[in-house]
Length: 163
Image (cartoon, rainbow, N blue to C red; front, side, top):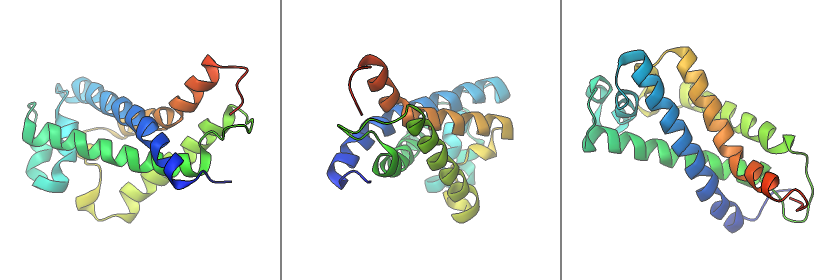
């Protein structure tokens, strides 16, 4: 059963913001560890607008870093809308706590396949231009946890409340 569109979109703003912030933080931390720059992998995301020159930028900037962050955040909200529509909590309908985790893993796998196999290179996240495959796996794992976080937090703070 799917949530209605309006409810799913409201929930997607929350879960997408959690996922976007978490994945941006994971990306920045991986960038610092691998190449000595928090901003570089987020800058690389802005290649969608500014071309490959964006992927070579290491410094924090409005043009590259803010653009990359906003593009990543918009993508997280998009994927959160998919997650919320098909896997988000259903008021009055109890579910297993595994539902949000399995759903977010499935949606994130779809995001990965879309980002790296279906869209033109110009529309990839750009992280791959600056981060290792291991870091990319971590970023996508954090994205999955971020998508499910709203449901998991709600469940843990209200254990008697049904989904």
